[in-house]
Length: 149
Ligand code: RB5
Image (cartoon, protein in one colour):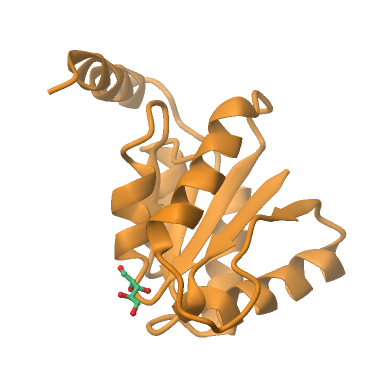
């Protein structure tokens, strides 16, 4: 499952992502927002992050879009177990999975075109987490979460 969320600034890009996922026959769940009316991005980042956290299927992930992708990334990463990565080209999309095992990618509706967004998503989905030396680093992130500092 692909969990989608945006604020008003990411709404249009989210809609075009939805169309593309539908055409590819990929399952998604749209958690809002549902219009261009101004809303607060943390509300949608939290909804998506919670769903991703609950979903134990390792192929599931989230896509969050705000104006820049920054607010969504910051908020989603407050949730335990979430590794949200702001992707801005195909390389960052690929290594977000290969090295960071990101479970959410974030993008900017004001910085990324629909065509670019689809390329980033394709690249993310076709990449494989490499484990190995990266696993130790990800375990360190989890230990930092447990410190509650
Ligand atoms: C909304 O204007 C904008 O601040 C928001 O979409 C996002 O870019 C924040 O990071």
